[in-house]
Length: 66
Image (cartoon, rainbow, N blue to C red; front, top):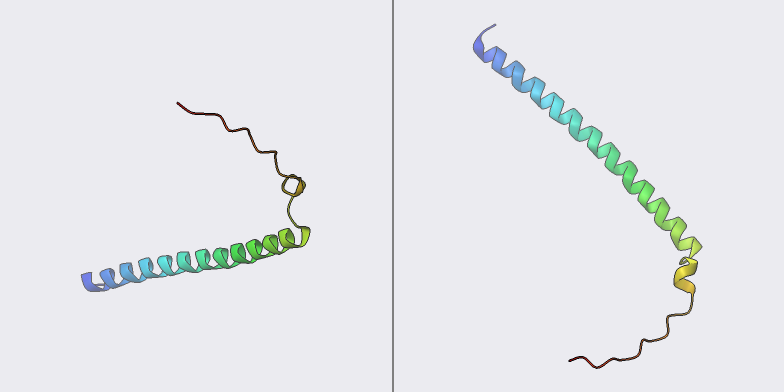
């Protein structure tokens, strides 16, 4: 093989590796988006946690500064 063929083969290998990496990351992103949507749906169904449903704190007294 000539130098040009080796260079073309090296570029092809790099391209295939990068393409495989992008495809793996894309599938992980799709799965992550699906999981986040499912979690958001579950949270919306449950409502806010008990700590947030409690009555708000009584306001603190104002203290003069200076």
